[in-house]
Image (tube, rainbow, N blue to C red):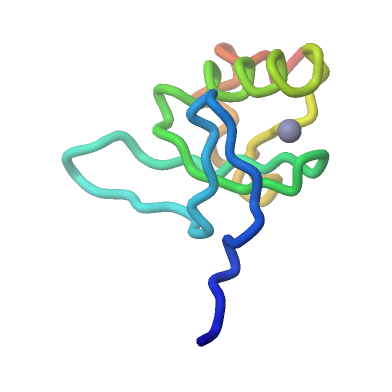
Length: 91
Ligand SMILES: [Zn+2]
């Protein structure tokens, strides 16, 4: 039986859990923003309203506050305006 690609992907207690899929925009929920962490090799999507907290929490808990996790680079410019103020992308 073929094993899923998510096998072996680390989970943690921060809610930064891998989904293996990008996006999931629907009308009645927050847009999902893909975030990745090359340090951990994780990739996940979180609600836009949550992305700042997710990144901060992840980086705090996993990387001593280093900014390892970030928004998917391909999408960063698209959503930068929406979240830049929250997570300091425009510093
Ligand atoms: Zn990480």
